Length: 312
Length: 279
Image 1 (cartoon, each protein chain N blue to C red):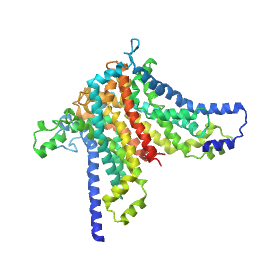
Image 2 (image 1 turned 180 degrees about the vertical axis):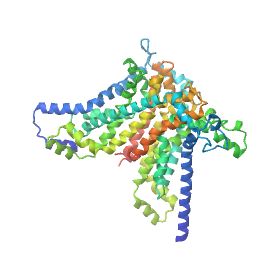
Image 3 (image 1 turned 60 degrees about the vertical axis):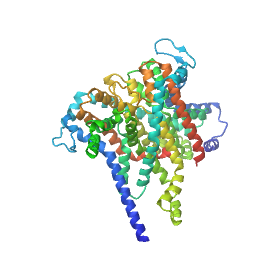
Image 4 (image 1 turned 120 degrees about the vertical axis):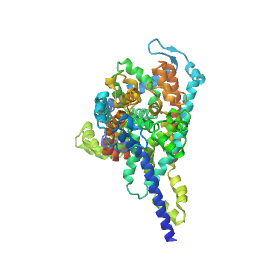
């Protein structure tokens, strides 16, 4: 609205068609470099994805329209169910733990504490550190027989090393290991978001609560938590979406040279990748991709609704 | 009363420090272990109790790794891709954002809505058709594929537009009256003013391209084209018992990101923080 008024007062309405055409051309010339790339390499594939979900195609022979067959296959495919299930379990593990750690650290770092900038850097750095490198260290540290973790556990508890958890190599402990790793790697990112949220809380609210005799817990419960609700909601949504999209963490923690994951660690994006690039079953892979899309879309719709509620 | 309250506060503060120090250690131990092991012989990496500072640091690991795998090539490829993608991203995003923010034209709202809508669609949902498209253009196993895939993100346009919205229109209007063209306004007024947003976009794009894993894994299967991430991954799975060398290569792969991160940290934190508070 503001733009329009400024421009309409700045220029008399009848300057002739050619000027307006020129203005449009100038505007489009600004958009074009980005838009052409964006349309060709993002929009076109997006539309193509919906078409592919309804065909059978190996990339070499002609496409076959199969209607809903790919989706019927999804309903009956136990491997896909397992991948979806593992993704959900991973999400349930990562989301609350990350939120608690991120909020806890943010509250601590929001106090007048020595070296808080250094600590913020230390907590944040794993988020940007190269995944392949840090996953390699984790795999060494959590190595079942040689790793320091199991050696320390053995030294403390006296349980023979063979009976200790085999972490990433153990089908019962794999999910726990990957959740722990993800929290370690990403909590700094969400901590920074929480820190920004905390800085937006009006200090007078705390002073008022203190005057009313509220102790630290009550101030946390009745001031911090409600004031941070929009931030918490945002963090929750982003965390869920990012957990649905997980792939590289699983490959780097669990897969061998063949980049294959087993039944207890396969996730949704891995299944899409494998179906497309190993089995060359592009149609079926796209049907899985549609499931991922719908999951994320569902969360995004919730997010939009929530932001309307919390907004401003 | 006052006294007891003070001791309580002192105690709480000590507890906070204790907690923070424990977490700091948990965060740092993996890097320390990485660094320490990168200077050891394979047989010494897993000795327990472990020796944090090796008696005879094996610097040779940092020499051997360059010949064991084409690490120089991997770093060159990654640096090349990250720099090209970042420059393209900055140029095209700020350019498009200027039109979306300061110019009037037909279809503006529809186009912008198109950009916004796609931010929510996960790349993993259309990576397969994107690959088919790139392959049909003959771009499989080329760096151009990675550049085209990363350089035109909707996120960049969105971020820059948000920032431009905070620059008063009167400024552009005054420049127009002074006879500056729209391109001139973009180059001489908007760009210099948007340094914080440009820095945020730079660090986000650079780090995400440097660390990208799945994209290069799909497109770059020839060894001489690989980036540091998938090159390192290839090395780890081929020579899984070369512990010392793996750790040395890992340290090397982290250093560039560490430098960029420490240098531009302020903008990184600002960028993350502003993504939480809606601008």
